[in-house]
Amino acid sequence: MKIQLCKTYLDAKESRAINNVLKSGWLTAGPMNAKFEEEFAKYIGVKRALTLNSCTAALQMAIEASGITGEVILPSFTFVASANAVVRAGATPVFADIEYDTCNIDPVDIAHRITPRTQAIMVVHYAGQACTMDKIIKLADQYNLKIIEDSAETIGGTYKKQKTGSFSTGCFSFFPTKNITTGEGGMLTTNNDTLADKIKALSGHGITKNTYDRQHAQDPWHREANYPGYNFRMSSILAAIGVEQLKKLDAMNARRREHADYLNRKLKFDEIDLPVESKECRHVYQMYTIKVKKVARRDFVLGLRKKGVMASVHFTPPVHLQQYYAQKYKRSIHDLSVTERVAHSIVTLPMYPGLTSKELNYMINSIDKVLRKLSRRPI
Ligand SMILES: Cc1ncc(COP(=O)(O)O)c(C=O)c1O
Image 1 (cartoon, rainbow, N blue to C red):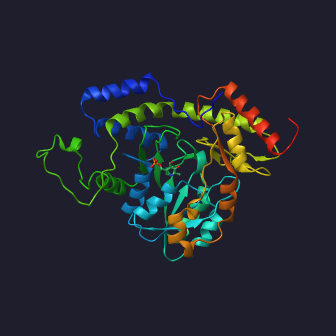
Image 2: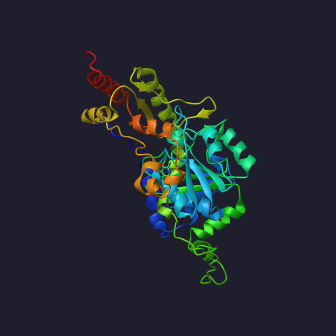
Image 3: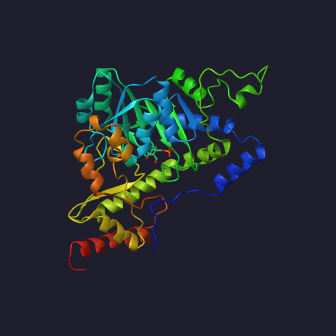
């Protein structure tokens, strides 16, 4: 048996939606984007949502359009894109440690890293679970800092019943491994109209009105460029896939939660720490990650892969140990011991809505066998 790490859930609805866009003849950003944006904003519970070509673009836009050029505190235990966006926007990343249980940024450690140069906190809602937003918002208010939410891995997850991406400027990814996908793509969410208008312009060459909006203007050829912008737009084809995926999101997340619940009940091994769902959160398990102890992580992952269970690791090395960051920011990198401990022991097990009970049981069985072998327990 082979169990992939992730699998998308796409059917005839997405195919039909793509075909309709092709037939319409309007392929770049247009009415489909407006529809996806409107429905996504409603789902998250914010005023505005903007389609973009990736979460990385959304993160860069969130920082750049807010005029942040100083220090941004973020976890090192994340995908490198979170930090890359800070650097590309012209700001300085400062890495904070995480909490062992949730693998999310530790508010106590954020407080230790605040300096007069700090302008923002970028939280990363890891693997489907929100950060401790109350404490982070309190710190941001106290020190007059902006908050940016990297919610790439958490679409539909909540903290105290409020969706991630609605606490400040939210950034989402629709990469195929995420809770919903458009192949590639991203979304930025905000309640700030001025910021949204600026990002909309910045992401379309700095021009205030895009081609579709200019169509019916008196002089449609007149382009007003207010910023030296980028092309970070999402095409209508991808937006149409997004509209269909969004309709399935809650059902897909419910399936992920059922699978996680089953695994949590069955994976009772001394060598494994299970994922921890905080009381205030609704985890949506974009990834199901465990931590292994007493056995070598590499042997465990390779052992599972040999059995066709395509486990992986998210994330190692952590960002502060990636060559560019380790060299360039070495003076500001101190004590990230929990990050390093977690990066050494974390393992991502296959997780997607379509997993069958047969596959789940095969996975549990394989884990049992690999652990017995590695810890020399009788088979
Ligand atoms: C935490 C985090 N941030 C950012 C990204 C980048 O998303 P995208 O590929 O849409 O740019 C990812 C995606 O893997 C991610 O996991």
